[in-house]
Length: 266
Length: 264
Image (cartoon, rainbow over all chains, first blue to last red; front, side, top):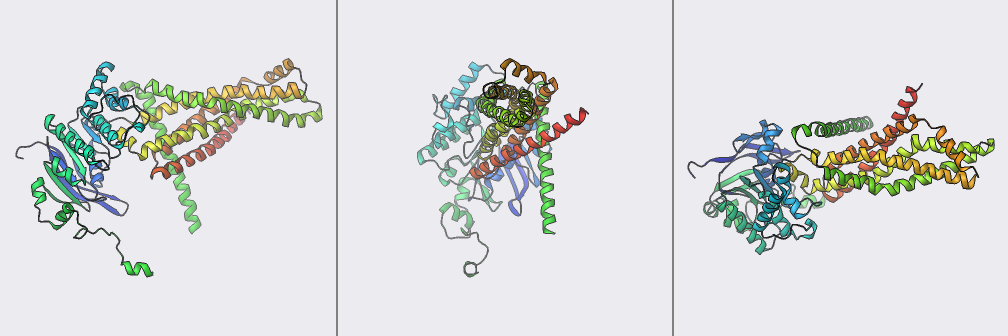
């Protein structure tokens, strides 16, 4: 990884919602062209971290650099320039219900470029072909299954040919075959087009099939960053427990702070 | 102390919300005026779609409400005026009260219930399903993209609807005047318009313009700040309609007072 260009860097990013501290000083670096996976249990702050990396949320303290620019100091116009170079795949796909699949995918092109409609139509077909949904342009999102919606969301995220794509739980709630297809898509995009990918997931199979590097998040802190092999062979008991998916270990499933018996008889 | 605290927090909350809605209005006007200068036009087809929804879809019910209101005013005023043998004054009674007051207000209430609620429910659903965030991530400003077309549609369509509603209300009164009170149709219509000044018409339309602003701003604001899934959308929609209703009556009172005292 020497001499690699850093495209995303977070320095000590912290964020609180009310009294709950969600991110506790997260520092990460993502290099150009790699697939960087952020994994961790539900509620560990990984989706929140993703939203800080794309500038949708602002950290209480700490800094985020995206494509070389520090986000908090940017004007709206500069932020828009950066936003056009990134794509985001939402967990719920976040397709616009009132638009057809084709209009959903073409929206950024129609709004941000002066391309002719015929060109836009061709680009939309190409992007839908990439996700295996060519011919579905005229359907409404409500007519699609969950997996198809996610693939349309992916097509929309890549329609502007972004430098970085962010994925929020791309395989959550999908059957294993569709999950495999999505993983392969992420790999293809990053290998063939050398797009940088940042993936937030807790799907272990997906982690080890797509990741160049993995960061394990727990309670708003980075436990460890390394290659998939390093993570697999980590000596950290929390990471070992997470990968094995075992209920017993240092990570507690129960989050109550008071004593169970006391709580019952209170 | 507790009650004082509560009243204080309600007042502070209202001030804060008012400030937020005014901020949204400022943002909307900004995009409306400066957007075209930055070559970021609001899409005409989305404005058109909103106008069809707000105007075309509300026309029938607005006419319905106004028609029966016209009938009711004619009957109620005839009940009083008959004692003085002044039945013919039913005509200006209906036309002036419809044009000045009831046409704009009732149409606005209909539109607030129908269109304002729909705006909040739609934007609220978009908010809780991450669609608003997705727009922002694509560098598309939700105010330009979602709020401005709805704002424009309502400030244009509500006065238009009001004109039709006014005519329908006068027609309702006309039917009672002619068929029930036995007045001469020509004389009824002459009396209807003789006692009505232009000022009555345009003050009514100014009212409906202001109501259109209030409905669209409240609807969009409540939608964009929706939190908490389906339940949150329901709550936001209810709050939006209630707030719009209160604001319509409030602005009606303020504007009527303004026109009344300005005339003195």
